Length: 89
View 1 (cartoon, rainbow, N blue to C red):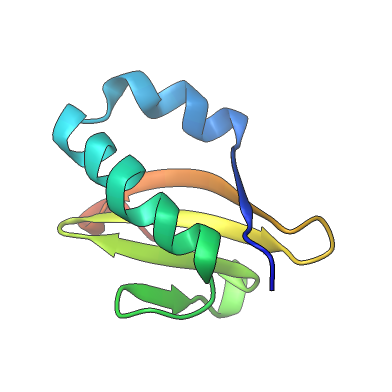
View 2: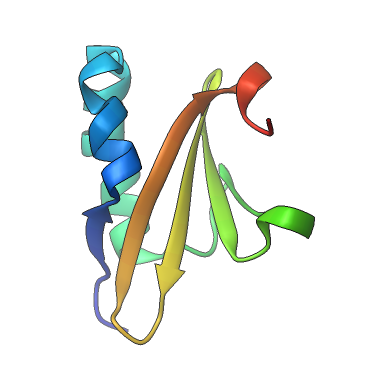
C-alpha cells in the first residue's frame, strides 16, 4: 500500500492560526506521519458512527482531530480539531 497524502480542508485551515502551537507541532510531527502510513488503525484512532459515519477521529490529549479517508485518491482530508468537551456538538 502506498502512503496516503494529507490535505487540510478549508474549515481546518481557517482554525489553524488559533491552534496552540504545541498541539499543531504534535499533529505535524506524530499524527500526520501515522495517518500517511495507516489512517484506519491505531491506538488513538476511532471510526465514528451515526451522524458522523465515514469520519475518523484521532485523540490528541484533550483534543480530537477529525478526518476523512478517500481510498480512491489515497488521501486523508483533515476536517477539524476540537476540544474533547466540544467535539460532538
